[in-house]
Amino acid sequence: RALPSCAYGFAGGLTGGANGRSYVVTRPDDNPTDPQKGSLRYGVSLNPKSGGVWITFSKTMIIQLREMLWIRSDTTIDGRGSNITITGRSIVLAGVTNVILHNFQINSVPETDTVHVFAGSKRIWIDHLTSFSGSEGLVSVVQGSTDVTISNCYLSNRDFNMLLGASDSDRQDSVMRVTVFRNWFRDSTQRMPHCRFGYCHVVNNLYSNWGYYALGARVTATILSEFNVFVA
Image 1: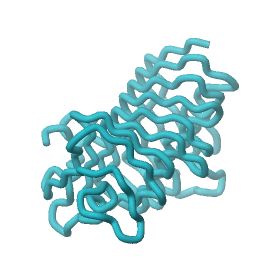
Image 2: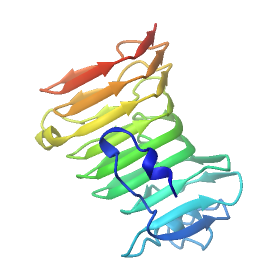
Image 3: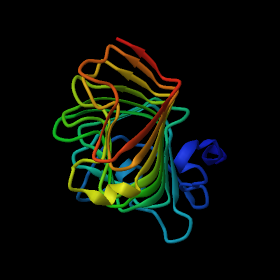
Image 4: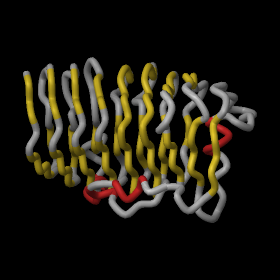
């Protein structure tokens, strides 16, 4: 549980579920109406009032979500030691704090983005994720969410990739601070990321086979771009 000490940038100092209970996912099935013990959905529902939950996996598995997976505060999903793939529906963080998503794959989400952070969520670390094939993009941070780091991820999508601030009218995004660090953006047309209002530190990323544009900013957004490599 020393993982949180590695968090870089604006998410630095978070703990996720390090002070809470441990839970091991042992089965890949998903039942949104009656989550079964051993499933991932059961694990994310366990989060107690004190300390949160640290979720690991007993083996390699593919989890086909039947509904969106809503994450509570003080949660870590830690895929180290197994090859974990989540498909079908997105992972959603709404108004939560202190969450770590680490070392798994999420792809093939037909209706939304793959990871959606919104409604004032803060202190979020998304690290070592592989994500592709989201119809509305991959990682999105919107609606007043802040203190987020997205790092060491492989992100590939035919069109949209990463959105930081969703609307020109969402002035609450002026508080947004996001670190985008050491990711590989590949085979995408735009939004790597696209930023509105907030402050985005984009550093040490690789861009390959990008299309219309890589970095975009509008409505008073500030992007500090450092040491990135762009291969057209």
